[in-house]
Image 1: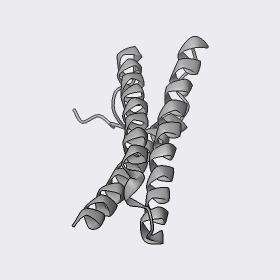
Image 2: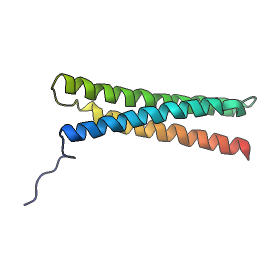
Image 3: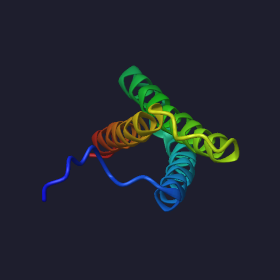
Image 4: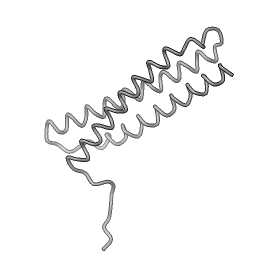
Length: 115
């Protein structure tokens, strides 16, 4: 029998896993922010590097905010015994995409500046 599967199974275990993933993304984003800021000494004169680093910082910062907001939504829904809001999965995808964009932009700038 084929069931209509509308997504991954939801339950307390999947909520805990998603919460841990958000915690991981938040920590990774904050560590990445620290790394980008500490290595931002390459942007001394060229405005291309300054604007690129600023964009990278904004993307990684957005990833941290989205991941923290997603974790907060999970805690709020579990504390009030309500189902997860639909936007939680959007926070997950947005945080992943923003972190990937920020790290990719930073790596591009770092490699371009050092070669």
